[in-house]
Image (cartoon, rainbow, N blue to C red; front, side, top):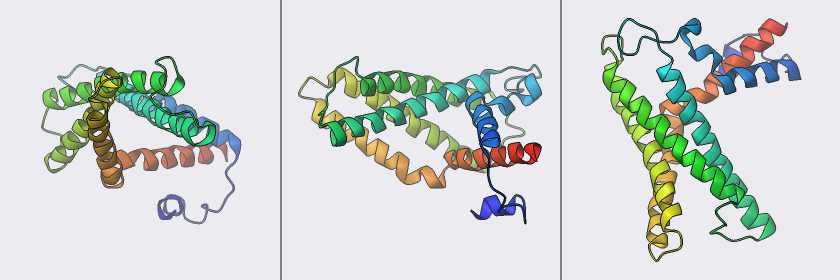
Length: 198
């Protein structure tokens, strides 16, 4: 709330209309502003590429699909009484499978980009946290996929405990990690769309 008020002092109380919300949502879902003005970023050398944007988007959609899998699974369990493990073609399993694959590809790709990027403009004191967060996201994705593989075996209980442990760790560190930028970035895009609309 302080961030929202601070980005436009005196204008924070204006009502939010559907048009700016829709514009901001499109900007978030397409990562339109992550293209370096359309030509991409200088990740490896002086040439421009969309590599970082592609991996970022893959990780983002993978995370959202995993979140959708957890949400749908909770609805199945608590509303309909349908217990897991669910059939392979069910929504929670499909969301989780594709989300896990995309999360692993996106985080591994971003880790790779960080290792080949020119270290000059990088804030070195933040690198450790960024590597740790990407590694944790990759671990959540890979343990979820391993859980899918062993779900009909005796190893399911142990694998579930390991996977949920990493998921818990992720949500405990989420507010203190770089991932919180998603919330602030979303609010900034909403503010921008609202100002353009006004």
